[in-house]
Amino acid sequence: MLEDIITEFNLRKFVRFFREKNRNAFAPVTEDLSQYGDDYFGNGSKLGEIRFAQEEKMLVCAFEACKPLSERSGKKAQYEKGKKILKDNQTDAGFLFFTIQIITSVLV
Image: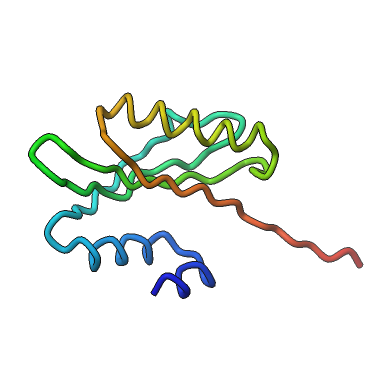
């Protein structure tokens, strides 16, 4: 299933993956996280939560990268974004997906 997700990326597939792997703990939740948008990231959304105990949870979120993330500054921006989201949501852990849309064009 993970190979399929990686080969043909789609956020709905990730939600299905978490549902299947954490049947009793994963709760799909759609929430706009546009307040976390900046020069590096946009179109943020919360995909769900995994509850481990009464007060312990993990967020599952996705963001679209506006710039390449291979540079050191991009990786630091990912780390800082994740740290802020976890702190703001008082969450112990998180899966944060950062995607980049590749646009190809043909010049004629």
